[in-house]
Length: 352
Image 1 (cartoon, rainbow, N blue to C red):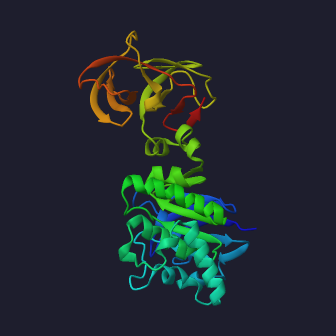
Image 2 (image 1 turned 180 degrees about the vertical axis):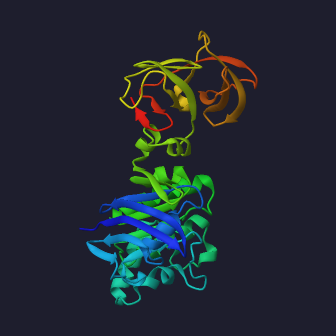
């Protein structure tokens, strides 16, 4: 069975440790993602899986074969892993066909020809087989780089910021296309990116990284609706943390009224907490007793995203659909609509 297990790996450069106890698994045909800000260690993890870096602790197991332990180290070229890089790195002097066949030169000619035709049809570029990289757009070049990496039928494909040089709209479109191609080829893959839209469009599982650690490995839905800590809550999607106080076993009092729920055992009366408020949780209500002032406005196509300041000084965001914009400094009535609040205090996390 094709499977990747990354088991408690540490990575250090000299005396400086950069990756701490990274642990996750990838099932056959599953697409994973290492998501986080620049410098969080995600590319180091990818390079360690590829064999370009050696972990100081832990194991990497691919298809039930250990890639490393205290006595073993499998060289990168023997790991059956394909890679797609940020800079694409196509050979400029080679045609599309010759670029794709670079990794399968040892195959016989009929096998090579069949595989190249199969991949060109799969990526929708059969008519470009005689073209050269400089004659292709950025998106087309990235498709050829993907086909080249997939040609030898690797057990695992690693992609390091593969769409970062493309414009935003093409980036997300290509991420969706690549996902379909990988699923059709039944190739497991790991994407490294700092762009959550890319991660959401392409991945089955996402590992959010910060300071060399995985803070949460989950589906996109759970990362957005059930973040495990403050960093994930603020990094994923848009939102803010609204201060509140538990005034009874099932009620939190905030600047915008009371939020009711079932108190988990980690919280008690008078605990000071913070509630995650997404833009969709803030509803404009002219009849509300609670007011907030518009301090900023951003056009979002179908409507406007507003930054609001409450009477207590907290900032929230509110998405209002429609073509008419509200003026800055206007005071509006708002209420909260939260079915399952995500709450934090200084020492714990809870959802109720």
